[in-house]
Image 1 (cartoon, helix red, strand yellow):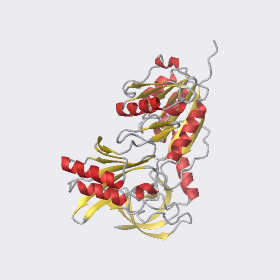
Image 2: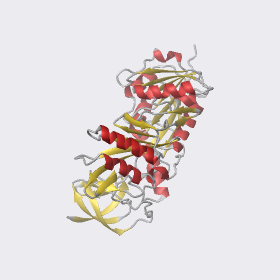
Image 3: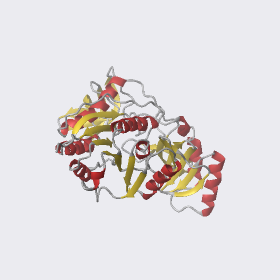
Image 4: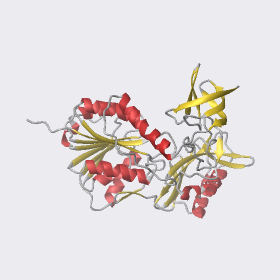
Amino acid sequence: MSSKLEITRLGAGGDGIADTPDGPVFVPCTLPGERVTASISGKRAKLQSIEAKSPDRIPPRCRHFGVCGGCSLQHAAKEVYNKFKYQRVAAALGKAGVAAMLNPMILCDPQTRRRAVFSARNTSSGTVLGFSEAASHAIVDIEECPVLVPAITDALPKLRELVALIGKTSEPVRIAAVLTESGLDVELLAAGAVTDACRRELAAKAIEQGLARISIDGEIIIERKKPAIFFGEAAVTPPPGGFLQATGQAEAAMAALVCGHLIKAKRVIDLFAGCGTFALRLAQSSMVHAVEQDQAALGALDRGFRFASGLKTVTHERRDLHRRPVTPLELKKYDGLVFDPPRSGADGQARAIAKSDIRYVAAVSCNPATLARDLATLIAGGYRLKNVTPIDQFLWTPHIEAVALLEKPVRRR
């Protein structure tokens, strides 16, 4: 049934919200101040028409916007969009009772996202490859994406060729593409049982297409060139599917903030270190101990360190920091620390850090809510929050990165 709705505000996911007698209703692709007609199903609605447009509405950059579920805010003017992203961090901090100096948001340009995971399916009419529709498992067969680096969008026909080789599957196949200094690093995920003949065909196609590497569910099929990512002066080859910051711009901004804050630290510990995003940069001026659960990531970090020149010592340790946080006693030998946990944050590890005397701490997070929780823990333990910097790494989505810098005063004896 169609209903007339008035949009009053944006929700945390970027949807417009209309207040109704039955509670809030979320309407994608709308803006505050708009009057719309929509079909309501529970707490969500499908936009049918806009009766009165907001002056802050702009034409979306992508022809697929509104159908593809990848972006939710391409229709918002720059001022509205930036304020929404900024307020995501401010609101999370406020809810956790964290008073902070919030720096201006660091922006990232379109066409800079260097990694993407597509969904694909082989059908009787060809290979469909793209992103899921909003609130659906249906795949939007994309022809463009203004978020991604051109090298990935230009390679969409090549990626379809790779998926076509594995034949028809009942479930969608995921295909991850990462732009490295050596070319595209491609991994097929959940591809099912792949025959040896298919592996040979994929290897031949990778050579024909000039891919750096192709893998299936972590198994390298062929590596023409080692996919290289530079963390400072160190070249690292991440494992297939290894974590990498979404854009080089955002990574450089985060690294500058972290390294600048920890510049006076002689011994630094990097928690949730991944492949060495921060550790290998910090090693230009400090001895670093990197802690990470993923053995393949640690191996990549270690090889990057060993083949680099001019770095101070980098050691590493495999450890599940959620189950076994580094203790305050173990932290005694360090005067600098950075942690970059997954979206769930670092609750237990933050409590251990709060009890330590580490002078300089940098917290990096893609989830404002868990970041705010962990910051509240550190502040309760005596840390002073210097500032928080939002970084718009995930363009036109509700997601936002942030870097928080803290310092603990030296105890007088």
